[in-house]
Structures are given as structure tokens and as C-alpha cells.
Length: 145
Image (cartoon, rainbow, N blue to C red):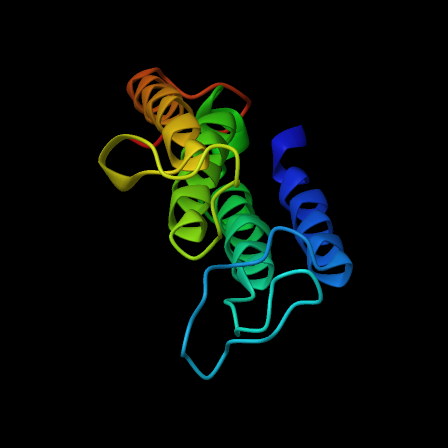
């Protein structure tokens, strides 16, 4: 259940990245683009805000819905799996807008290191979710007949 609070820390971490002007996005001509102090003269995606919304707010809502709406805390591994899979997916989406690390650039098939490192996390999360859903729930909740 501890992983349910992790999105709060991820949210504030991404907001701090935005305030510090670090980990900015790729160059864009979208209306949301902004010029970052160390990002050159061209407008860039505020990818830190996108990631704060996905990794922080959306993932927090997902965890809350699982806990309060589906009683997921009685299914060992479900919350951890949902967190890993959700964080991995959110990270992959956010990486489409973020400028890749200068020393790495784009890797296989145009993917960034963040996307490649998120794949095992997504797979582990899906495995944990599947396992949690195939095992009888624990806890003192009465079983429906």
C-alpha cells in the first residue's frame, strides 16, 4: 500500500524539475511551448508538467480508485503491479515530449533510455497484476456466492 503514496513524491519531483528548468522537452511549435533558461532560444514542451500530471496526478487517481473502489489492498501484489505498470506507461508517454539526454540521444528504433528502462517495469507490473487477479483475495472481506 506504500506505493499508493509514491505518485505524490513523483508529482512534486517533476514540479521541482520544472521550477529548476531542467529535463525540459523537445522543441515545439505548439501553443504550450515555452523558452527555458538553459534550453536555447526555441520554445520547448514543458514535459516536466506533462510528467507531473501523468506520473503524479493520474497515477495517484488510479491508485486511489483501486484502493477505494475495488478493494485492491486485499489482493497482494495488485497495487504494486498497477503502480509499476502505470508508472512505466506514464514514463513512456512523457518521454515522447522530453528532450533525450545529450550523451545518449535516441537509441533503438528511436526510443529513449527512459522508454527502454520502462519496458521491464511495465512487464513486471503486468505480471504482478495478473498474478494478483488469479489468486483468491485475502483479508476479512466476505466472499460473494
